[in-house]
Length: 275
Image 1 (cartoon, rainbow, N blue to C red):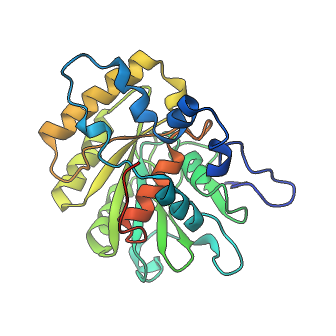
Image 2: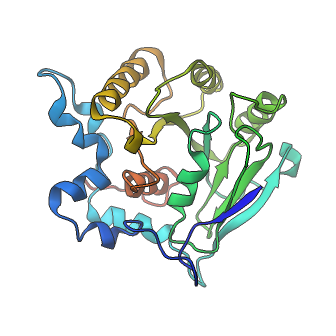
């Protein structure tokens, strides 16, 4: 296993644009593209296209700043890796609201979690050298407010006990507030993603789709995948939040908005004013 620090401690520089204060120094169009990447695509939609799913969650600056504070560690607000589990009886007690991140192997899940925790230099996100070989559920405690759970990747060379492990977690973890289903923004929904959706729908788990690696997709390809997934969500799901979240762990596009949504669904940002 590789241990990758989120950045910010001595010898580890905070990545550019990891903090909202850095983003606010950009000119307006660039700033909007970083914070609200989905809105950047709106101008290329055909006339008459329903734009409501593009702006359902649109927090203002104050909400973005409050949520960022939750992801910034200090002495009174520690953020750290807690433990790993191969079975649910090894999991830490469900004392806090939880969100879990799930997705195909090599979808960029660990990179996204590192980006979310980039303002907490002590956090170590475990990254497997070989895609699909992460066999444990990893728990990260964010102060006294919530726990973020990193699930094993599914698909290519996934552990055979993956389904049993994930099913047990989804069925037994009653403090789970939202599941974040990560989908590669370049290739869109794959067969294994549809299987994950079916499992979430069967268990009645509220979830949201996050498109990763958007910096690698052309604008046309990204827009195509967004519209196709939005149509799928509208017609074929019950528990999926209608708005997609687009992220780039390299450019930090969408990371600030995703932090805010995590804070919101865990009950730590109950009122989100519109921007």
